[in-house]
Amino acid sequence: MRLLQLMAAGACHSGETLGSQLGISRSAIWKQLKALEALGLEFDAVPGKGYRLTQPIELLDRAAIIAAIPAQLSTHLNAVEVHDEIDSTNSYLMQRAQNGAASGTVCLAEYQRSGRGRRGRQWISPFGSSIYLSLLWRFPVGPEQLGGLSLAAAVAVTRALHDVGARNIGLKWPNDVICEQRKLAGILLELNGEASGASNVVIGIGINVNMPPTASGEIDQPWTDLTSICSNPVSRNQLTGLLIGHLLETLTTYQQQGLTPFINAWCQADILADQRVELHMHDKTITGTARGIDNDGALLLDCAGKLQRHQCGEVSLRRATPIR
Ligand code: BTN
Image (cartoon, rainbow, N blue to C red):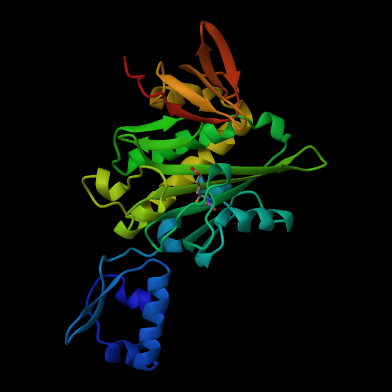
């Protein structure tokens, strides 16, 4: 990773200079570049000059992240871990929770080998292009009282995005973060209950910041990133610190008051409000008009005049049926 620190700003470096700076041979440099390419980074070979990153990157920097967390909130923070490479920040923190990690532990990675999305999907996680963050929180209540937490977390994500200049951010029930009908960020909340009646929750968040064009072919839904929608470049470290701050504030508020303080903000961002939608459940699909959420975060669906509440499933906008 020292090689990447030398190259992060995007300048051109010869194999020889890099080799002498790192005390290794030119062929070892070449091998490291190939290994970085395998993680999703792209390099140009400039004839007679050497190598450079196709796009400069801002590497995650623990000190810069912590500096961006508002001081009054960092009292709820236990630790911030930054990994170059990991299977999944969520899987890692769930494991750490079993082994006694404290509430308020945050894990970030530059690259996830097996990033996980909702409903068993993959979360494509190229190196240095996005934010892959998980936060562990221990609640003194059982999982049944945490039904609305993923919606509150989605509100926290929209607030952090707003802070860095992203506009027209919407939410698709329960917690997809959308801009111009494309997915910008996703949330995977995982929890387990303890015999004592308490719960361990890991909130995993992926935000597309500056995705490489090569990611397009791998992602199975329309997506966007902050580079495409913001007029100014977004600092990953700044956004990460702000996001951690909003999450800590959200978790402490949710612990005292539940979803209620977040319902207005969630409904204001609701892109499905009053739209004809389809709700896909594992064994059936139902059609109705989306009417927001109830106090527990369940989706309210008006089906032929009857209001139904649903706690799981995947919603999509219903395409207009062609008139014959
Ligand atoms: C979704 O499908 O919308 C949820 C995506 C969640 C991705 C994040 S990235 C950090 C954390 N680690 C994972 O493996 N998944 C979540």
